[in-house]
Length: 148
Image (cartoon, rainbow, N blue to C red; front, side, top):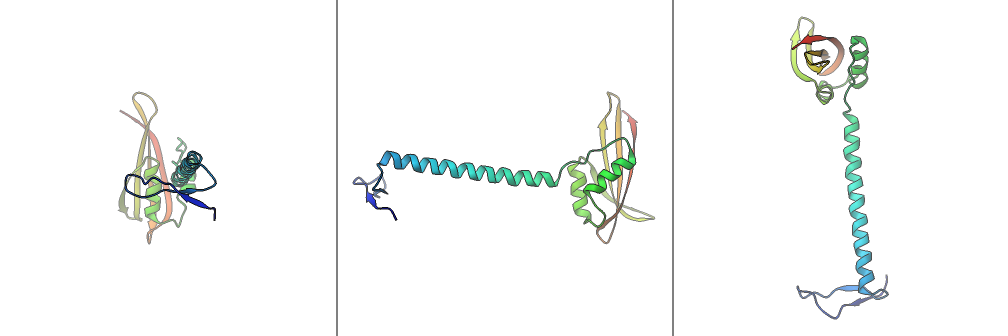
């Protein structure tokens, strides 16, 4: 450990500063400021890295006017066997509004999204995410144009 010296004047709280004996106070403060700045940069980069990795997990699904292509893209993000709650999170992150429903074929998550094609026309996607025992079992996609 490096030799230290005690500053001869106490601060306002009555404590004495301990500074390295090999440096003067000015260079010691510069070193401390650089270390704190470097630490702040590391914390900032770490927090940005965590935010980026979370966003990558919930990237939006690119929707197309082709139903089978859109189905394949959805299945690439919400695979068969995935928990239904995770599938719902992925769909809502992609701009869908989802509600739980059922019909003669069983339970499903109904998800609906719309996007403007022009001033008076929107494209609408209606997706049934079928599930059994809390896990995705199939995906059905319908898309079409609607007038406003």
